[in-house]
Image: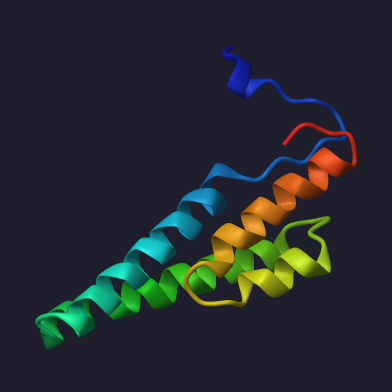
Length: 102
């Protein structure tokens, strides 16, 4: 078992799937905005738009359904694009300030 797999009783860490969804949400927004600013190809928007929406919903639901998520992190998760990453960061800071590892 690697050090990343060690679980400490009573410590809730940020789930890797939530962290990944937040990163992919931001990446999809960058792709959409880059497309809008350059070629404005409707096929890119049609392909990436629903992916971005699904990732946004996954992040929001992941934060809402996660037990013990502070209200601040849940509200940050509602911000499209970077809100998921800000919420994940807030969760990490919340655990550090309470004396638990992130």
